[in-house]
Amino acid sequence: MTFGEWIASLPEDDFHREEVADWEASQHEQASEVFSTLQRLGCKEPGPLVVSEVSEKVAQSTQFAFLKGVTEILNWNSNMPLDVALDEFEDNETLELAISKVNESLSEDECKTLVAAIGKFCTSQVIYMLDEGYSSNLPEISTGWSLQECSTDGELTGRSLSGLHESDDGDEDEDFLPKALRTPDD
Image (cartoon, rainbow, N blue to C red; front, side):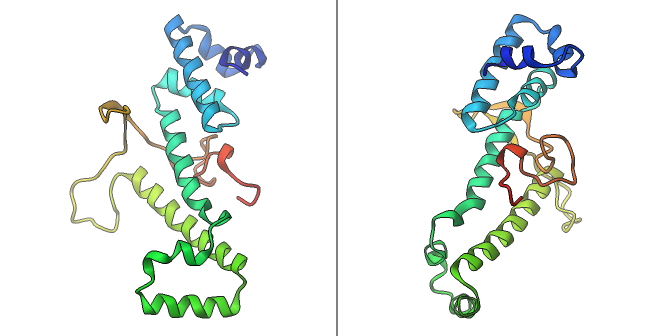
């Protein structure tokens, strides 16, 4: 499906159709490119993200790519043995003892599920902190940070990535992963 076909498939009174009606030709071209990019990235519902990116100048495709990268990190357990994933910690006797005790109590799949849950929790906390722009745990620091979009050459585009913790329907209470990246268990 193309962006034009997606727009044509919407009801006449749909918000997105109304938003696009006044676009210039260059905006339609940009929308087609962003739509195609999001599809290649695996986005199942790129239309609303495209409208937001073109109309509101929100770096939706970059945010989607960032969150997809985070998702790939979180999904490490799908085909990597736990001992391989923890190789870099081999010299840590305390960790080895803990892993040994966990392995005595849980199957490898149960261990992977536990590690994935902990990883997802930690990652979501990092996502919230990135979005917040400062650490509430460090009130003595008067500066913060911002995640910025850049070109493949490293040049800043001037667009910030924000709202990473929101689902793609804007519900802050939802999982931080866009619906298109969630597994049935999420």
